[in-house]
Amino acid sequence: MQPLIRIKGIVAPMDRANVDTDAIIPKQFLKSIKRTGFGPNLFDEWRYLDHGEPGQDCARRPKNPDFVLNEPRYQDASILLARRNFGCGSSREHAPWALKDYGFRVLIAPSFAEIFYNNCAKNGMLPVVLDEESVEQLFREVAASAGYMLEVDLPSQSVITPSAQRFGFEIDAFRKQALLDGLDEIGLTLQYADEIRAYEERRRRDAPWLYQSPDA
Image 1 (tube, helix red, strand yellow):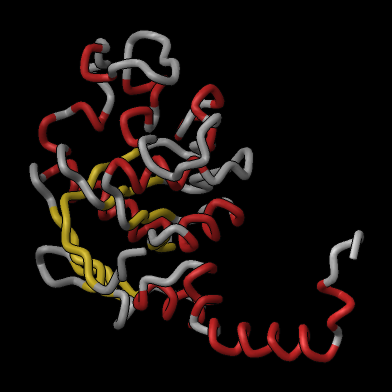
Image 2: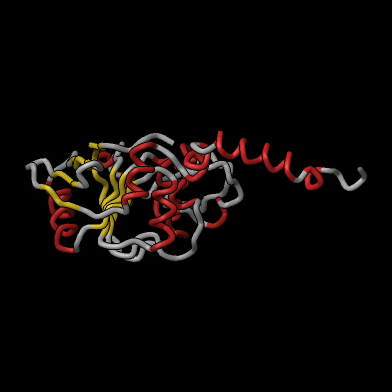
């Protein structure tokens, strides 16, 4: 997993509350568990004018010109600005997979669904919670300026605007360090690989019958 320390990028505004995970990645795309390849189908039902199915060439599909991610000014956005309760609905991990595969590394909203928040952090994305007033200000600034960019500094837990205004945010210390180090749960476990191997060797020596086949 790629470490997340500082991100400076274009902001795309998702000006809707209660965006659920089925809108983020519709159910027909949940057949794969590869974690990659979901970006073209992010917000599929809003982004395209036809019905999407796995395996389609999305480059040939008709796009909805009124959907925010199809607007030229928001191309290459790496920060998504959203409204309250983003990521509600089912607990599907495919939702953060799709957002990350599209190119988002930071999500900013007044609140997130709890499971979605945790899944984002586990997959190398930073969900930032700011108060409603701060989020509203950022929506206004994004709308007023094409190519609007924010800098998000995880070590100082700050969102920094082009005018150098700073918004602080809270994050669990353990989750913060995992993002800084670029470690998911598997990576964190592998830090103790030597200790795990030593335990298995002791266990095999002290209780060899546990490792015998039923036919032995």
